[in-house]
Length: 122
Image (tube, rainbow, N blue to C red; front, side, top):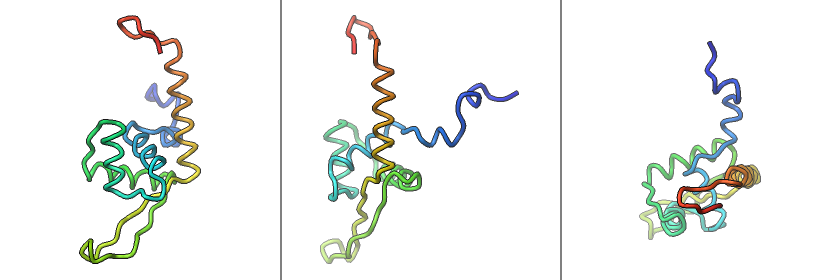
């Protein structure tokens, strides 16, 4: 017997959806623009989302988003200040912008008519 959830969507459709951390990371990169590399991205998430994210979780998410075609990365020149290491920069691609727009549209639709406990309405 097929799984009920498989009746509604398949794995290709699921890859179009953003998880919460993916959404936050893409938004951080959109805010930072060309200055997007690990340290500023983490700082933007901590400041904007008021959420801490480990380096491992951040880079796993960045790799996943790049594999989905939502962003691209490149390495800067190595510098003596970084002990001869280079920085890995990230740029939002058009598919990433579209993913953010789809996610925002879906969330806006879901919030319409929601009444939260305590009487507040979105």
